[in-house]
Length: 162
View: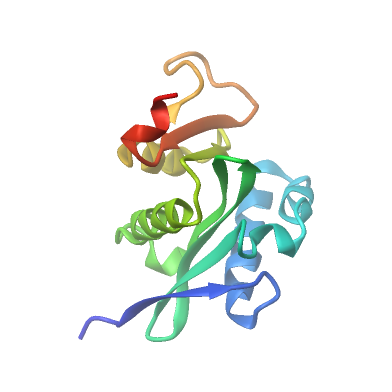
């Protein structure tokens, strides 16, 4: 029997968010070194709280299996952060599902665009964003740069017109 999947809004300090924070931090440290702790602590919890932000968990039978967040980047843009899928639940389309829900909720919060950066050592994240229609704000095919890879996506056609 397939698990029942539900979305739940959470705060960074919520017990259900703990696996997201812990595993994401461990993965960032493994890929980028100890400086990853600074990235995970960069924004206060209020940045990911309504009305300008959101931390969203995808639960399978009540247990967190994926999640992500957005925060206000500027008046018309949300910045996507903290995308995560539990290591035991990858390759099942859960990140794409979370991404779609975050886009919808950002649109409902009044944002017209999503901006994000991912790291050069996260090819699966780069692939996810390209497959979901995000535009890279870097030149594809150039030698890998050590810095972040920025992307954007407009949430509706009208957002592109002045």
